Length: 265
Image (cartoon, rainbow, N blue to C red):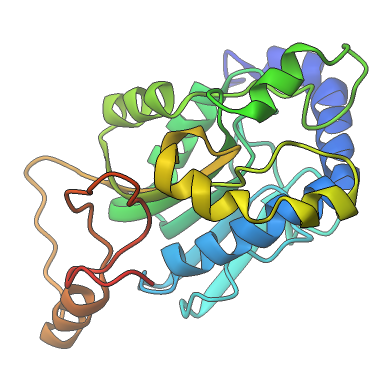
């Protein structure tokens, strides 16, 4: 039986592929390299202490955001070339509750129905599975630049920036609980690598004085299922306790992925 949204996917696949192709090209620009350098470090911190049997990356398969993770079976799903599995985020060819970890690098912003993409993510993640998402911050200089960009400006200005508050609400509705995150990329979105290098000092100032105004965010959330209690080996519980990320009360200017002993990593 054909899913009720199949016709919608078919009618928008060309547009979706075009947007994603534009994003892939942008990744090689000075702006793209600046953003991805920061994001790669955050994804590395977010996934390195997630354990299980299967992990997947949805989108941008030429960027390995799972390389710091030690789950034995890792693969990429995307409509872009280079993915191990060709798949639309609307209809993932995966069994329900089959993944322990799923990462979405700028996947939601380039899809017509990001909430449906999150529903699919929730379906394929097992209870206590983790999801890591990156996105462009709607409260930043990057959003201001987007407001003055034309319709044909290309990525990332043709994306739908999603505020962290809205993303948090979507995740909560689907049973997710945020357990880590960070803002970054406070420099204005200059096109020149030289100018981006000149204003690197803004990174430290931004993180200290206006932490929620970074151009990009990376957040991690865990899928909670009421009434389900997982039984895991003692060694795994102890390792998770020592290395697990946790949201701690933060003083002004402090934001980021931290471990349970309060140490930034």
